[in-house]
Image (tube, rainbow, N blue to C red):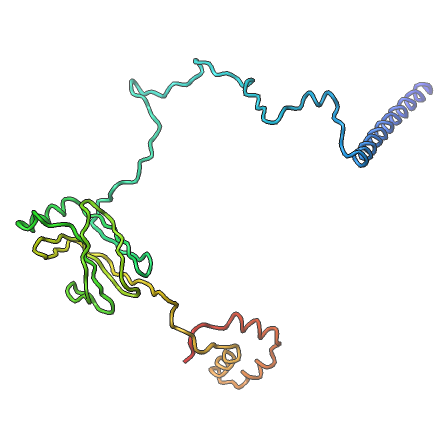
Length: 262
């Protein structure tokens, strides 16, 4: 019985010794590897690992699995009808509305686009008979700066003859900072203009910076005085003076306003 115990102890000590030797060998290899890289600057790759490395750009496409004709899926069918995937439609050419929109592009240019249904044009042309045979589509621009426009009291206007079938136009102006609205209609050979649809009103921007300048800036001192005076207290100046300089600077930055003080 004692021999068996001694044998078990001996085998256990042997396994512990082997484990310690393996750990010591791994550590030794690690330090040797660090030493080699430190003094020689590269790491030798074992021949077996070299064979397993692939060249750059090699995808192994030749080894990809081949698809046979029997594996190609046929399109789904419902009876004799082939079911195709849904097709996303393109944007429509029109939306079935009668509208015209005018917008600013820059101080000397406007952009206008419109949509007018053919049935409305046909009815309008019938109402122009017998002047309709030589009527041409036109865009009339009204200068409505500083007035309430009623269709007849524009400061001035000018006409642009349109290409038949056109649906948008760039309008070039002679001066900035003016208000405009537009009519799409027909211009007869007699020089009369018959409007069909009217746009919104827009104002072009200036060509220079705004001349609105703030004359006075509200500060933290004026803010304290205003608040405490409205409360019936004379402690405003005392509170402001006792406020640390750092807090005064912080509040002055965030509470200052660009509004003019009357």
